[in-house]
Image (cartoon, rainbow, N blue to C red; front, side, top):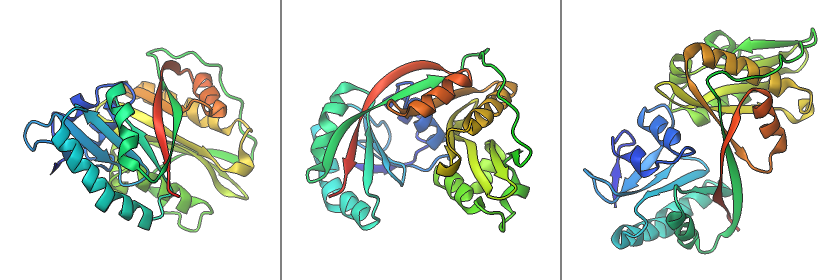
Length: 272
């Protein structure tokens, strides 16, 4: 098992599904964080990726017994203890095909493993959606830019910064390669945001959040539709990935013109 650069040109082919290919490609573009271990330095046929947070990815061949045993030892002696020490709490185990999905839980003996389902939506070339209602006067839809992020006294700006930094290798790369919108309240500061993540050439994913006190008020739809309009102007392909049971998220995706591509299984691993 060898550490390899996320930019290795053969890695995306090992994760060639609609819901993983763009994620791994963004890591290869050095926009999204990722640490990679593979069975071969030069021509990998199996790989394990950690996004340095809660998501891990198994790809390529699942029948390379040497790689699997080395990976099992690495996870048991190094990765899992360090993840527990960091108090990550949970891990999401992604895989591109059934062989890895079946095998993945066996690498995490001692953790509580449960099956969950996610759903991927994609933006068609000409999405159809009804315009969202106007915001009330005390709320403002703003572009996320350097000037906004440098307003350090603005309530909620730290949470927005933390979100961007968790999804990007550098804040500067987000400002240069990505884009996003947020809603700022006259009284409560930043209360919602929608940002590009997993960005590579002409493609991105969507990260969206509304603070609990302001949910179910249509703010996510306002941001998502503005996000979509900007993405269309760039000619980008856009993916929206969510838990299958997260009805509020999937409804917003549909209101913003996204169409369902596929459902897929993952494992949710909880530390005891």
